[in-house]
Image 1 (cartoon, one colour):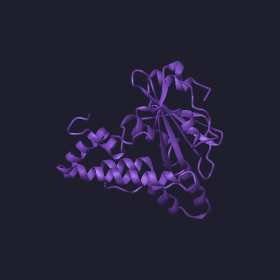
Image 2 (cartoon, rainbow, N blue to C red):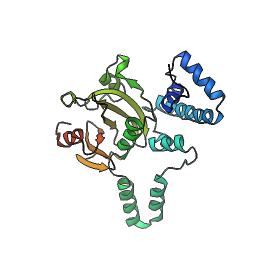
Image 3 (cartoon, rainbow, N blue to C red):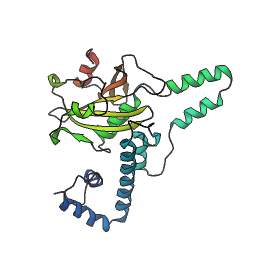
Image 4 (tube, helix red, strand yellow):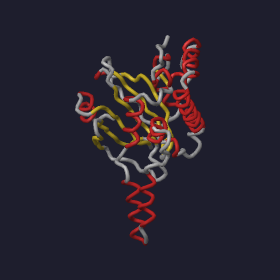
Length: 250
């Protein structure tokens, strides 16, 4: 049974219908007497409905940029700022004229964000902050590779990190500007997390050379293969990050 008042994790579990009947009634009783928290939960429920609606046809329709993980985080935490940061990039592109301007526009759009920024954002939202709950858990007696194959049939196999003590524990579907994406979270016995991220290269087929970069406290190893872009993300300056950086089998 959950404790009262409910934690943020408990409230997200309520939004995603993961509580039993007794806990659900406890949360509903609490929300009835706490209108500010109830309003926040209703906003989360609306976000969850929009995301599920988008993902129900994500493999057949163009991805909705309104469901970008960074935007979801902004709506949950601030519920007011709903403008995409990419608008600034578009403004720069529009302001440049002539043939050289169009060339600059293409370069700006391609280089506006470092490679696989969305993979790093997804790690922060899901693995670190737990804002977006998992769509699939290994504890549900399911097979993670089979779950991923339902959406990415031609993608590379999940990396085997058992020698390093990491096993896949959960998966999450996401919608990006390039198309539907998925993130699989690995975890060791100490609770340390690594993520495997896969998405299409986008309409311009922007496949990536093998590379590595740091972003704040995180390290990303990225590459392309079988028609998809991939990234492995982990906290920087850890044995896991060093192993990923030295691995050549992905």
